[in-house]
Image 1 (cartoon, rainbow, N blue to C red):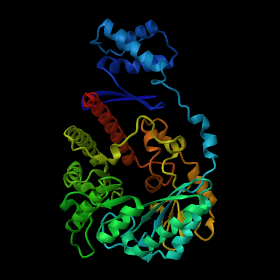
Image 2 (cartoon, rainbow, N blue to C red):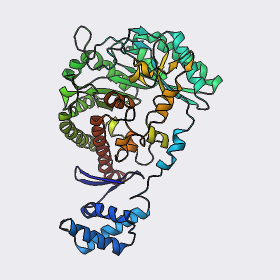
Image 3 (cartoon, rainbow, N blue to C red):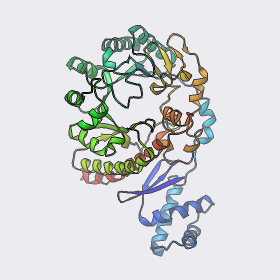
Image 4 (cartoon, one colour):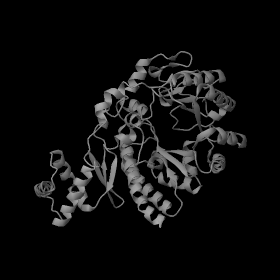
Length: 472
């Protein structure tokens, strides 16, 4: 299975099953579909392939603008790549899917909802300003301790464990955050574990004392800001309606600088109101942030800010525009990392992650302030997905097994998608909310994901051209 496309002047060919990516000339690009068909029919000899390519071009009415020598060299290149298992490769994963679904899993990560409350009133908040379809609540230290004990007890032989402090706004329960970090550290040596703590914040309560603690204890910090002042303040106001931009920007800049511009993300959300979101990425970069993520809102199309089907063409163009802008900045020595364009072509994620994604409902769980367990933060409050609690552990193994069986081969829309091993089947919560099935899909999200993968790979090609120059 191959995927080929043109972007920013590059002819790009992806061999989906091997993960190989090639930048090819016009001749290879034009004859590749016919060559793929012939290869699938068992053609391996050059002259037979060359004759078949010519015949195919004639039958389809395509007039070749390439000479005999060019066609011959193109066929040589295609056959060499195929022989090297970098083109037309077979899917080596599907035959093992039975073993994959029956694999032993352990819990390795928790999203601790230390506060079902927030000091902002973000208009697109899926958690209803932190309430998650329920009541305002703050996690007690006792519940948090039980959650960490549950994680250690459920992690098997895994050493590295992850805990994300989430909300609402976790800084509204700051003392418990600090106490839980200390308790987690006390569990490390006797249990042969190592905790990686992270935290997501809107920045309103940030101060020097909190910053110092975050820099000492948090492996990553997510800073919520949507971009330009007018964009941010429209969607992320205080409860009284006043904006948050002027309040949080200096704090976020100070925190990002104090971390050496690493191990954080300035994370925004774009909506129907700012389809020119590349301007927000540029704005955040101009403010000095080097680790960026600006993502599409996921909301019911009835909401005025929701991404609609008719918005998609403009968004696809904007992703292209953003990719070109980020290449330009990199070449000028002002490069930034944009989360959705970060792809590792040399290794990439392990097989389990390629097939099933984030591990929600199996390796990753969310914990409410009162200790209930859900597959992830986006399922919190949906009682049909209540899996158990920190006192009894997982009591609904059927829910866990349902998520354990969810992978790119159980999702019909994923089977022929070139991006399946990059998005790993997408978000289960989005699939559920838009299709009623965790094995379904959120079609707009899939379309945007495919474009982001294409842009990310194009950027790799463009920036690879710079490497020889950098060495001289």
